[in-house]
Image (cartoon, rainbow, N blue to C red; front, top):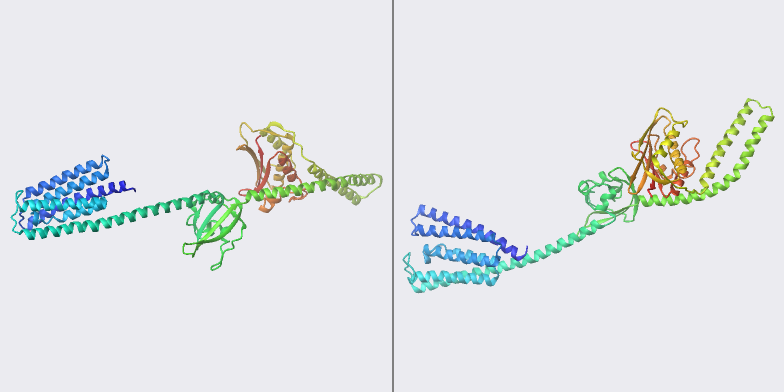
Length: 536
């Protein structure tokens, strides 16, 4: 609050005090008259009281006119001195018991004005008091009460009051000045403290990494906006909660009692409030108070989930490229001898008479040769560089056609229910239709294999922020987080008779379309695959 605002505040306070003082004086006079005769003419006393009330009303009106507060302070204090002088005159001048009111006005002047202004008010107070006393003594004005005091006692009395007036001025103005100086310093310190708090708050709010602080008992104190986004919880909901209840993986980093935390950066898996599992890079340090004592712990963390996924994708693509080159070379070396072996066995079976057991062996060789040939074909398909011939197609009819073919799948039966979540107008996209059919067929085939006892196959398409997402979810045996990370690597099949190349080819095709694909455990069971493609 500035000095003008403080003056306005004190003027409002002075108005209230004045009203209370008037009521007190009136009540005191009336009570005294009940117990002892008073020489004070009641009509004069009441006239002054009513005049003072009227003047206070005028002061209150002036308060609403937004006048200069210093000028209004001088006017109100001068008016109060005049009315106090009149009250002293009608109550006995030299013998008045209301002389103390001058001191109250001087004290208020010290609060409202500077030391010079308060000195002027104190001087005016004594001048008015001395003038009314001398005028009454020398009968310059009508004498309401007889005065039997000599000239010297009168001068001594005035001298004592002079010392009292200026003594009160000196002490009250000195104290008021000290309080004003202390108030200004306190206001400056408060402003500096608020600026510092705002600066620190801005730093915390602007941090791109998450920041979480706890007390020594593990109760959450502060969580910045980046931390709210990473952990999926708002600060007002997390504040005061136990860290072990909200985020057990972070609580496990807390050291045992009396030990210092491991300040090295660590990677932990944490589940956010919305149930998503994230990989966090966390560093833990002590929270120290101003005195240097331990006050809690500070967690500084970043979300490494996307970075780890990208690192895994790069490593996977490197492994897949190397494996593809090696597999292509091996496939060419296997395919020709394999065809010769299978053909020779069939010729021998026709030329020579074989028994039932030998015929079974021939069938096993033929069947396994065909299976091995399919594996070789998949390896060759995987090892070839994918060339995308883009066409602008509506993705929904393409998915409908794939689902129609899926109904002829050997493992498709009445215990499997298909749920489709397609936009009514479809989704236009530039893709290679044949390769996209292969992606959807492989994903659906994988879902059917995961539901040998039946279940629900859900397929949805949505367009969000310039991306098209195709989701294929099942209610089958499900995937572990570890399987989700390796499911697109070659020969990672978990099904009997599977080559482990179907999902690897899916990943390869989607990558050729400049998209990405990932898997995650389903909710509440099964698994969910998401194909994300750029809309343009």
